[in-house]
Length: 377
Image 1 (cartoon, rainbow, N blue to C red):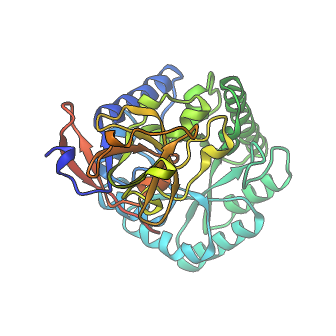
Image 2 (cartoon, one colour; image 1 turned 30 degrees about the horizontal axis):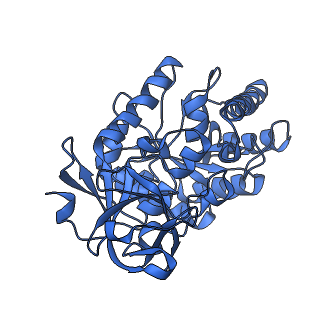
Image 3 (cartoon, rainbow, N blue to C red; image 1 turned 30 degrees about the vertical axis):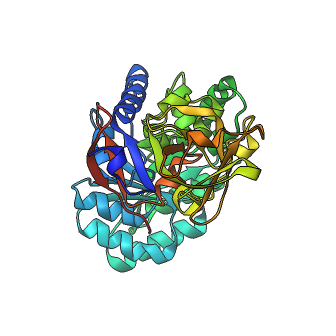
């Protein structure tokens, strides 16, 4: 099947670019003598993740328990649920553990540790947990030097319903780094914060077998990972315009795009109208704060090559509006109704979440496979 055979909008995945991106991360971490626990929240597909797990121990990172269920059904058992645990999810976690998942949860407070331990004791099981460390002030976690770290660690270690497995951090502020040098500095800050906390736990006689770091920018540019046991990253598999805006990748590294059809024009406004609105692209406008605002996506030809300065400047639910980013005229005769275009997304996670399958391009540019994916919690 060819791209021209597909009904639009459709999510297109270039397998060659996917494999190249996976190989690049694998080689970089091999040089640093580090293992990868890929984050599967973007992929949500075993067809993708089995390629990411090649040469790795086999553990994954998830952001939903539905992801944990799906990958467990495909015999992936080593799972880190890397979102602070809500007490109402502990029965679900217990069920997964009963089905064979070695699932580790995440928390960052004494209150959460007590709730987890009490639930484990009531169920007669043990919930392994990591303590989340705040390495950059971006989101959740305990800051290095905070005495609550040891309080949490002791609760997890000493009570029968829980087990302390270590510490983790996510340098989310790397997404705001203006230069590659700044990302490298953030990677070192991330490493230093979590290693300091692991050492504090060790000095207190508490176990810390796992020291986990990760984001695609810091994983890409980390120069040393002394004291770390694993790296987590996810969007590196596909990349997107936001990552390109950070300098983490180039446009021709982006493996994901949305195939769309021209359905009309507005000549007086120099607009091309397509059938890929925000329901196909998502509402993500992450590049609006970067040096180059890519609108809702960069417009490419059927071969995936950007066309002039065309972007999706606006969207409605099922309509995309293509315009010249400089406000200049477009030769609309080049884009008659029915013309197929491909749109590079701002945020691979958000755009992929609008679709139920990847249309996978093979080496010759044909649609070689359809890989199912899933959404939800």
